[in-house]
Figure 1 (cartoon, rainbow, N blue to C red):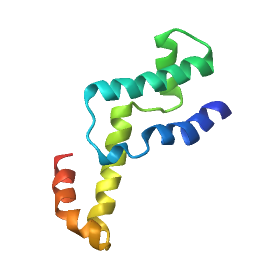
Figure 2: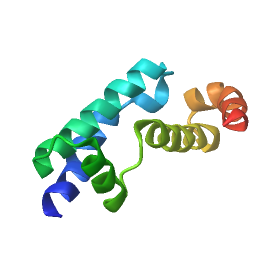
Figure 3: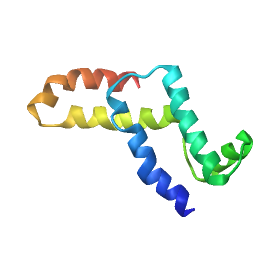
Length: 101
């Protein structure tokens, strides 16, 4: 459990850093999911995707698409609510983007 916790708190944030600010294609999400699956395969020393899926569910690891979507919503909310002059320039666009999510 400690290794999985370290991976979730140290490695995955580095993997997702900055992705909320740019649009991603389906192939890029597949690449991110491949990294996540490979990490769990190494941690649990398995080649079975079924075992990896069970471990991902047990440790509450969501897919890259869901994680990036949640991070994007938080990012857009922070821009919309910021008092920073630069953020205010993009606040209307951020609010429109939030409405589409």
